[in-house]
Image (cartoon, rainbow, N blue to C red):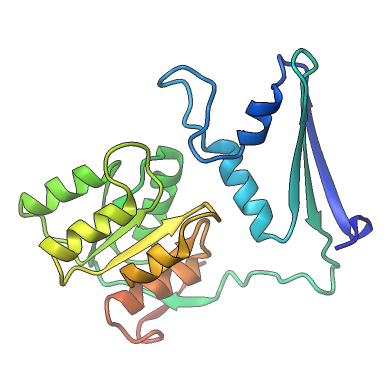
Length: 224
């Protein structure tokens, strides 16, 4: 798309800047120059993924000692062509089924848990795949597992699915990711639904209803 038809957002700082190696890897998942515990290395990666999904592009200009400028270019949308979400749009609603939410980022986990409660599900959330397996093996009963794919250390979402297929083969699983560079071949082999974060509430609710074997419009309620 011609840049004349894009909206550019530019953010600059006067910090220490980046060398070329750091700049090239700045949007890689979990890449960080901070000490252990100082950062997840996911911020720029998630931003880059969202921009890519919106058919935009992102560039980073930086030199050591000269600060950094990040430019986002997003497609312009005319008022006539803009889709306005319908707050009264009906979505499949749960009936208290128990969902195990596996998400390592608390700023994503808490809002997602609140959304799941809003559309009628009972939610228990954990940070890691290992915690999820421990809960299930300890006898906790769930109707569905909703898990992030990319989680630092321990068990990834892909590994969690493989473990659950062996130990709890009848338990439905839905995976989520905010990254565009996940191996699609690997996901096809798993044969589980995959949602791109942030998924619209209607899309999330429909995926859960489908995974639970419900009719898509059986218990529709308003999200308003």
